[in-house]
Length: 252
Image (cartoon, rainbow, N blue to C red):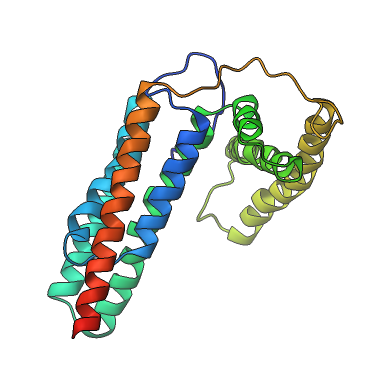
């Protein structure tokens, strides 16, 4: 989505301050529930409410433009999905329903992941993984990936600005040339950035035989307890509805 910022810094943090482990649980919960349940019954209300969680988190960071775009996109897809289910028919209903269903299921997870990346530094993420006793075979690739997307986003913006200075835009006389000017430098940058981030991770001591020190303040606070309790009860409610529906189908 346009307007999503992937800048992962610890300076001047805004919004709700959550532990990285809480953010991971939040991401897994939203992704799981949005994909694993239907839109029937009470879930027709739970899913829209759950999709508001990333909206509120992004809004708390004062990223009003990004939060507004996400909300408008989700509401539009949700309304179109209802229209396709009730009034449309045939091929048009199938196309609209397929597109809107994908968007309503993917968008909340994508925005929660964007919030996780933008509000968590690499050091905080590594510290949280070490607190969870995750093996370094997973921590090192994850730390590289964690910094990879923000760097790629910055590189793409730099390439886009360079193309604007050369008066190369979408819809020009030669669109294939525009694709070449953007995609080729970006693919070259992807390989270079991957190597540089891997070297930087090893330089900082990841993979060393001794334990690294970490100055980041990692720990659970009141807001983390509230978020985890909310997710816990949400999962209990999901399992209750799923088991109730299962026994009703078996009884029939």
